[in-house]
Amino acid sequence: MSLNPKTKYSGLAMTLHWLVAIAVIVTWRIAEAAEHAPTREARGEIMGNHFALGVVIFVLVATRFIWRQMNPPPAQIARHAPWEKTLAKATHLAMYTLLLVMPLVGWFAMSMYGSPISVWGVVEVPALPVPVNRDLAGEIFDLHAIAGTTLLVLIAVHVLATLKHTFIDKDGTLFRMLPFGSVKR
Image (tube, rainbow, N blue to C red; front, side, top):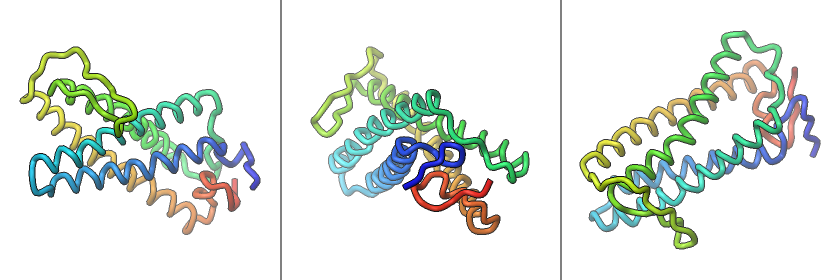
């Protein structure tokens, strides 16, 4: 396995990227499953996994963000058009922002219910010292859901751009985030 720092992300960045990708998909599917739960209690149990995974996503993304600051990613592929480079930067910034802010907003909303977040019984994130306001918490969760849909759209743009560059332009963009394959500068 050859990781060229000039064309590929580091092994840790790759690992964090794919763990976050999987966790986001699972978290989204959990939220969807909770919408169809037969009872309020079942919905609460299902959403407990969503909240726990949200904490994990925050830790993974924060770690990745810190790692990225200390270990800058490889330069963008020179062959990409300026508008593509700008769109890629904007998409990455928006995804990082949502991936860091959404868990915090979820924690804030849970705190407005007066509830801590249990991470599968291993650790408990205490509720923030905010007044209980279930109505406002519900509205915040509605905004959280809109942010989630926005994140899914950004992920779709990210994936489609990667596939376009890899299979149409044949520049190997996907392989920047994989330990195999080659990237054409």
